[in-house]
Image 1: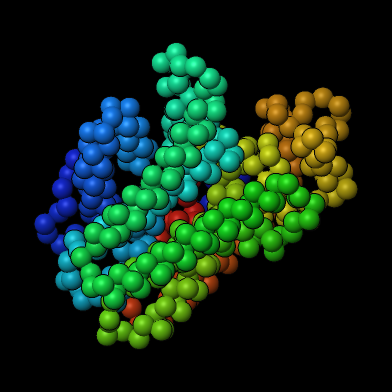
Image 2: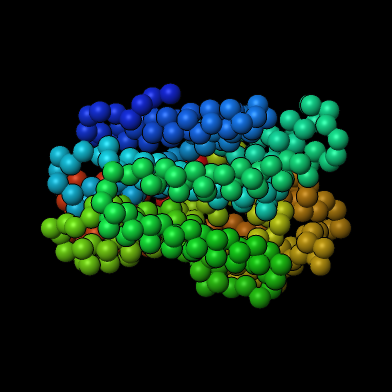
Amino acid sequence: MANDILEGSPRIGIPRQTVLADGLTTAVEGTLAEFLSGQTAALDDLDPALGRFARTTRDLVLAGGKRLRPTFAYWGWRGVVAAREPVEPVLPALAALELMHTFALVHDDVMDDSATRRGGPTAHRIFAAQHSNAGRRGDPDRFGTTSAILVGDLCLVWADQLLARAAVSTATLFAVRACYDRMRIEAVAGQYLDVLGETEPGAWSVDRALLVARHKTASYTVQRPLQFGLALAGPAEADVAAVDEAYNRYGIAVGEAFQLRDDLLGVYGDPVLTGKPAGDDLLTGKPTTLLMLAHQLASPAQRAELALNPAGAVIPADGSGGLNSPAGLARRAEVIAETGAVARVEALIQQRVAEGIEALAGAPIHDDAREALTSLAASASHRRA
């Protein structure tokens, strides 16, 4: 069912030479590994337990991922700088976005009580297991949750420290920080709206769900990283205002498309590819755009199958199963598809990708950046993980 629905959707040091686009991920991860090595050693010197805490945090940061935020920031920067401008001075700033991303993921997993991320256990599950294996006193789950919150906090501090290492002028760094701070505030705001939506789904709407997508995901995944990269470039020959507007339009559109794809993957994705179980949004009744559209398009009979009781469990039409059972989840996913909501979300994704690409058409940026961002618009929104 899941594959059928999605089938058609379309310790390394900082490098010393100019990094080409295809080597960006390696360069970012090398920068992260070098920085985290020093930070871990410093905490290990204070106390061995802190060293173990830091190494677990390091491993979470380096555990893979698409590195999309540094990539969008890189092309936002590359779009206006000279062709052979070396990337090494700004690599710390690009890599800092991954530390911020880890902060967001770890806290998000705590709020959602998710079991897996990137194919492995989430931070709170890792620390709960460490607690149990060590035979410590107290509740392992509470220890895991508390430790994971601290992991996220530490990553946010580390992000600030790494960003400060960018070899740019003070004026440029202040401009970058302003964009970075706005990005963080919008991510927190979007996350709060996401949590609030689960508590009052009846008051939500498609427009409200898209607003959450814009702030929770589009802002800090695409829109602000592009503008962050533009700020990193400092004074440029390009019409900065025009570039900023193009990046803004592209970022909102493609960022929303990215979240809409996440909504689909959260219900129909293959856990082997996504690294996390499908159905978490159905378990909580999270009012995503997909689910809001399903309720809007559903017939009375379909709406009854999608209905939640006050305790948050599906009311099965035949009195059997339930939301928490595999059969209940599978049936709910089928009903959502039958309403036409999946097709509608696919259309919204296509529309937003087209809007994003159109925003770049006349933008005064280098052609290689335009081509790369055009490709990223498609790959970020038509992915299987």
